[in-house]
Length: 132
View 1 (cartoon, rainbow, N blue to C red):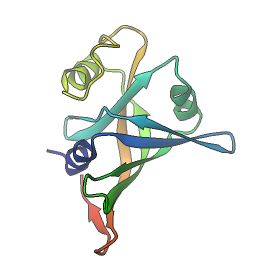
View 2 (view 1 turned 180 degrees about the vertical axis):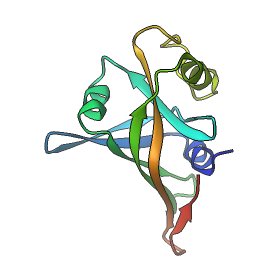
View 3 (view 1 turned 120 degrees about the vertical axis):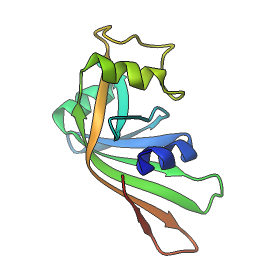
């Protein structure tokens, strides 16, 4: 399994940071899935996060582990992947928003994370880079 997907599933809820003009925007996310060895996130094309990623696909994800002393930061570029099989894979993942969207519904957007750099931090240990 893609190690970054595995780590984001461990933190359960993670936060995505995007940019709108010169204003940072942060919101919680919970869906992270793997397809063809890559990490995928998703959203609706009617949401502000979609508009922000369309204008600037650079993002950061942040999640805190249950121990309260370690966290994960992921910097990446979100590349839209509109293949139906990707949408189906994301929706079939336990974290997928299958109650909100359907594959091919014209509202559901999936993004492959590329140019990924993930680092696990801790108050008690040196940072560790996580490979996909």
